[in-house]
Image (cartoon, rainbow, N blue to C red; front, top):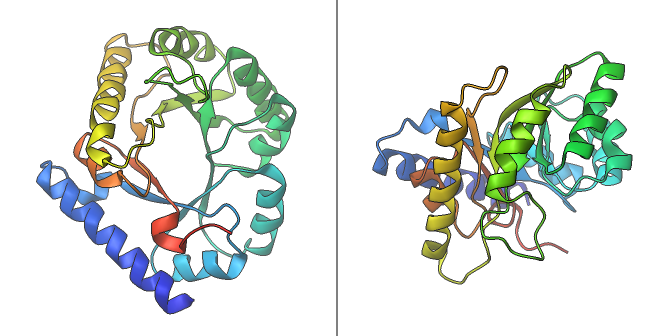
Length: 231
């Protein structure tokens, strides 16, 4: 298992580097987030040893168990799944960055819980660029208002945006959605809202991460290409 993961990590990092160079970007401007949901601690450790330093989890209970077992690893843990408000207290305790803030209610709860933890919680606003009914996220117009309101919360720091395009067999179909998110980030940046940064764009998964890098992604969320198909 370890050798396979090591080979996979190298291939993904090489592809990220090539995509960044095609776009005239520094490869160092893109971070790989290894999506480790349903993956055991041994596989995460193997990916760490191969060079992955950021891991994303989608489920609070699984993440609690995994982060405890792997507490010796100097990694960043990101939350990349849909976050229910009643789980915010755990998320604020465990995660460096939460990618999926999609409502003011959730933002306020995270702010409250971050205050209890004595921290400022870094978050991304999840945007449903394509307007898919089955996807979480705020619509682009609503994202601007959510950023404005959440920016007023003292224990929350908005670091950028996240999106998930509609799945397609042709990864090129994702490109317009990545472009739209990057454009929205530039628009929000131009508003100069106090305390708001658009430093991070979380977009791109196993099937389309190279296209995301070409369009400005700073965080690509890759699971299957690293760990294989999920159980």
